Length: 88
Image (cartoon, rainbow, N blue to C red; front, side):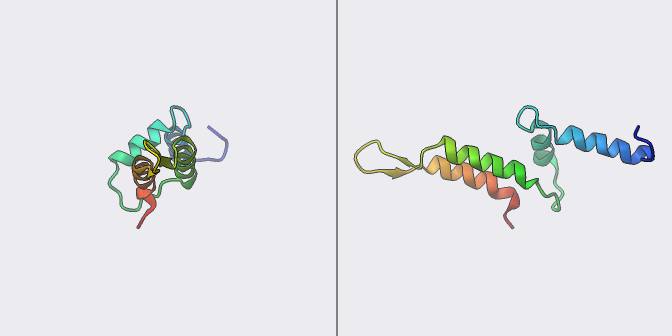
């Protein structure tokens, strides 16, 4: 225990540290968000921006099975589901 910090606050800090651990792509936090129904839960913007970057860089903008390019709707769905927690 860090000197001067009440045990209750220190325990809360440990729990927060466990939720926001970056291991396994923030698995603990993502599970917490999926199971929590609190309408005031605000997901950390850094995690969402990281996910958006991965989606944008890892998926082509257009698919071109023929000469005419098609919009990659799978990419758009991924972006929508990723941004859903912060949309009001």
